[in-house]
Length: 222
Image (tube, rainbow, N blue to C red; front, side, top):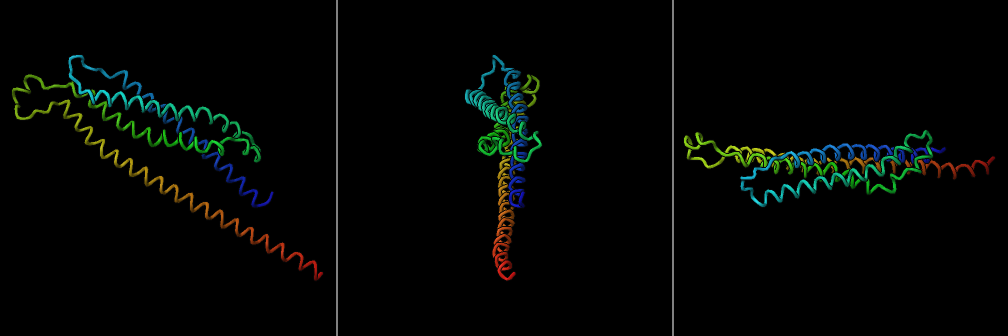
């Protein structure tokens, strides 16, 4: 096997292992977060006498449904593609990498990775905020507290919900900024790596061209 073919084989195997790692991370994250969302929706206790804002209930149910749907979609992609990649990665044969569907299913793998780690995580942050509002909003002041302090109209439950929102909004902004920075750094790293590989291939091609031009000359003088 030539050096050029060996480099291409190494690149193909690296892509296979990277795709397998992404699918494993997506499946674990999606199963965990979707399970938490379902438990939160089932276990939350809605007070029958509480007049909940209609928009809050709609936002909570819609966020939970979309969150579960996004993570289950990522989990379905991981479950369908991962066994085929695992079967190829366990075969100790360099040429078996071409039997893996990771190249053809590259877009699906990246879609599952984005749904699980980016969109799904952001929806989970929103789910936590909405859950705090649904859980703490029914808490009212006790009669003793209401007689002692008539100047404030914010109940303890509403204060707790506002506090959780004030904490989670900056956290969500930091999460978005980190995701953008991480994606740009990853793209920059991939670009630099591809440029280095192209430089190596160009050097190899130049060496092969010089060898082809020198060989007929040497045979002619010989």
